[in-house]
Image (cartoon, rainbow, N blue to C red; front, side, top):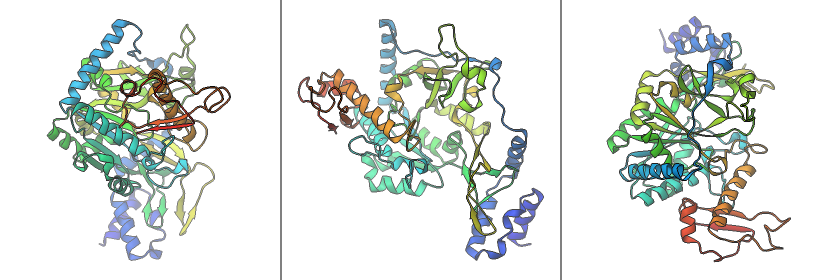
Length: 471
């Protein structure tokens, strides 16, 4: 029996033989490509996803969850002292080489109207620094501050792996030692039409999508990244995603708080600005720490208020975590995270022609990294200030757009300058009443934080104009 016949019969048993309808029209190379894609399909996994598709997604009833405890931003001298102690503990772990940075960067820049890996998108308000450069320079600066080479692990996807590696090589790894940068691809899974059927994204490839940021945990294990971390003596992972240039990577306070609390997985959270803000909510579900994605929280829970008028479920998770290496290894070995479905417009081939649907025609399945939280013996939620840590880049225009992201970056740097004693623009100049605010950009290599900037800048040493680039 030929390889094609064996593959066809397997797909026929599972009601998926339709993807071979145009087999006779394919070239020998295309046939090999299609058979290779088919060999990657796990039909047990597929059967379970089809069942979930038939059953439909369910929202989480409000009665099953409670708001999560949160370590709030410090307000008193005692609380500020606790933060300082946590910072000292985190800095000591950094100096000892116990921390690795983990960048989840599997996305393309399609929604931004950009061709290529999302990390290659130019986001710098003045220089046009790319997202990858922002992150790499921050890791390099923190490595220099603490006298250590912080290793960087980068999860790519099938779509952007080659482009990401080439970009880092072209830019000489932004000053990082190439031996400290570890790339791996996340796994792909098939998407299904609304009847549970496989789709073709080309005449010879099955339509697939990345398995979600939850796949980062299994990817760390299967790629050998966990083994590499252990060889370096790394015990904790600073997890972040590519589309937030305001993230504080390997934040000593966060690391220190995580370790002091005995947590296995911790989250940074901020207060949601409205019930409809599209970020997950930190909570306790059945006595276990959890994050519920905004689309899975039912309307009653989204709208619930405390007596003071604040949202009951207001601790929004912003995809910044610290995880123990041992915890990641344990979760990945178990291989069990729930699958979430989202309906999408997925172009597909049939009759040897491409169909671009005008309405949602398919379901993509993904896992979420925060769904590992219930497996943690203990977890911490640390509150951060929105303006200091969260500038998501999702859309070309509107909310979480290129413009809003650049403005949030510039605004943070203007605050730093103001705190360092740099005066605002004089009347009649850009930034004065009725004029645009100055556009400011400060490289992490010049200053990692406001304190470092204040030590370098003399009050009154220069006057803000329309643009300022430092570093």
